[in-house]
Image (cartoon, rainbow, N blue to C red; front, top):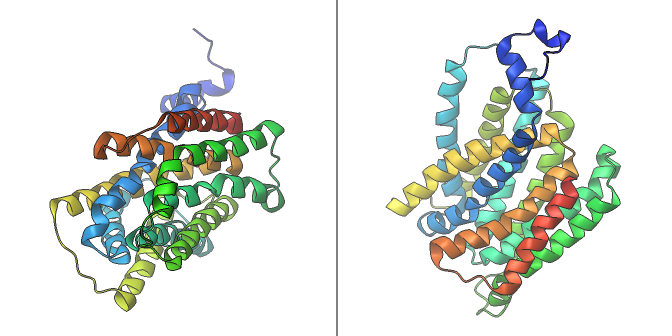
Length: 313
């Protein structure tokens, strides 16, 4: 048993234990793994729910449900939580970028017929773009091993998604240039939202930040839905399941883990985790929808995992 450090003797026991857990290797590994597993279900949920609702209508219900869960949690927890108007405004901006813009872009692209594989590949460019911008914008230094990891990860991503890509390109052309513009907008939302969060929202209480983010995102998508969509929903079991799962597991759990990762690590390292999302999504497609996995895709998965290990080192 290791002796208790003098500076820990006067700390509350729960705080000491919490600090030990927070700095443990298991804790640091568990968060990104859990994040990837949950975040990867996003395309599965979109595939289940979008046939029954337009994208921004779908997101309106999703964010409303998130706020219904967040508000009681915030009220029940009586520990003091303070934030300046500036911090709240910054969190609202993050919500508009990271939630409304990113998800609105991706959902709209898939709704317009863009194959999920192509959408995943477009969003998978995020780690490389983040690394390129992290040094000039945030002063982060990227090692040679991390650069190699980022490039290898992109190669692995292409190998994993090669079948989806070629299937999409050889289809009857049932998706338009508009779909690509939407997914590009989603990529910009993810990229700018994570940078903005890292730069301006590191000190705000997480509960207040979450409420502010989803309030901003909810107002944004409901206005767009009212202006450009019919607002009609076919309330099937698949839609309800997708809605509840995406609201609680994705918007609640996965986004919370993403905020923790951004606060604890360098942005380029955090972004590299996103390389694992499309391969894991491909495996979920194999398990839940019977989609095939080729030997080349499995090699790509291994390359991607190796790349993330390099980038996180």
